[in-house]
View 1: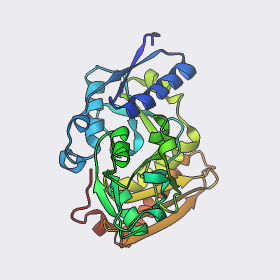
View 2: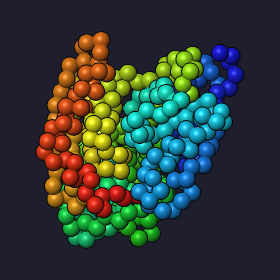
View 3: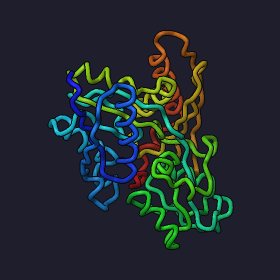
Length: 314
């Protein structure tokens, strides 16, 4: 390929642009190619409706993929937790950069931690998974569905409209707002979404040279972990808005914890397991681990919790 500038498609939120610029910098650093970030407006960015009503987090991904297939951009960057687990015609997942902190974080008024909040405290979240786990920890909380970028959500705490919000720590770090965090939830308190903290880089199928170039930014240490987490999500046939948490880490062995939670937090199904990664087929082993843990959850009745009415939130 020539050394012409690559056009990187990104959502237009401040957080998306920040993470896309980081990926662009890594591509230039490791592959020597200049990269221009091109903003793409998605339905999810324009609509104020709940995500469940307009198609879930996939609405962010779809617009970027359309721009990619239409030749408007050469590659696209997504939050991996928003990326559907199934394949997309004409598109390949070319890279998964090194994963950032996958944990969730609370931003509450007056520096409060979750235990400090008064009974009936209003906590804003755009995630069924987070709401279900918050209610599992404290059933007296009121979880309020919210939309909007990170600054909008943080502003609801500053104004007193909400007592707190829960967001991805990595996202807050990318926009320089970790100073607002009052508590970081460890995975044994609140399991992250599968793939949380990681980014995905896609390009068109049939461009092996570009795919190989982009592959240079993949963080191999975290690739097996997110592969296992997404394999579990796929085997559960659950979308990114389902109350499913998973966290994998380690290299020898790779271990993973996962859970499916009822919407009201009253029932939590938990599993854990590990697999060695010494063989050449490390990603195959990671996928197997995810599938096996999903099978355990399904045997315990996870399907009923995933499909329960009213589970979707924005």
